[in-house]
Length: 174
Image 1 (tube, rainbow, N blue to C red):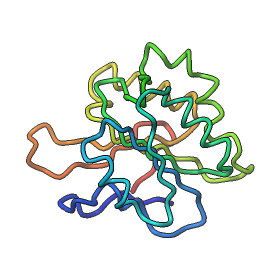
Image 2: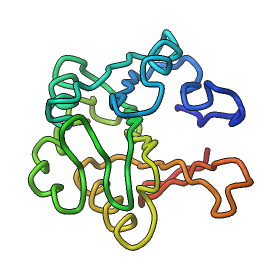
Image 3: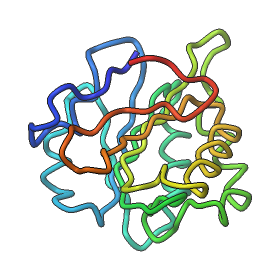
Image 4: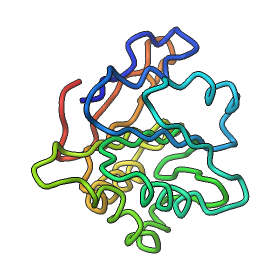
């Protein structure tokens, strides 16, 4: 199982994606993320990192990569975002676009063998879980992917360390 980052003060805190395990992890990085090139170089060797193309549909890019990488059980999306919305390449994955991307999202973990552990989708998108829009977006995303969804939540006082919060019925403790 992938563990959340432990050292939130490290410049690599988003990239400590877990200890070596049998699961296959992919990390997708939106090019609009600050220091994207630096982050790509810092991702652990056991994880496959893919930088999304800025002028192409990010959801389609992720789906194409997953079609080539079977048995992916963990996906990390490092993106910009807003409540209920993730920016992925030239597209946005939001409440307004989930129905349009439903088929793609339903295939993301479809190659996992039966009796596999619940797949996990980690979201590093600014404020994606905030408010009613964030809650509804995460519930619908879980429904489509059947993945446990974890979001990095920053305290409202901006003083404490960010915490992982599982935002789906298939929640687990990390």
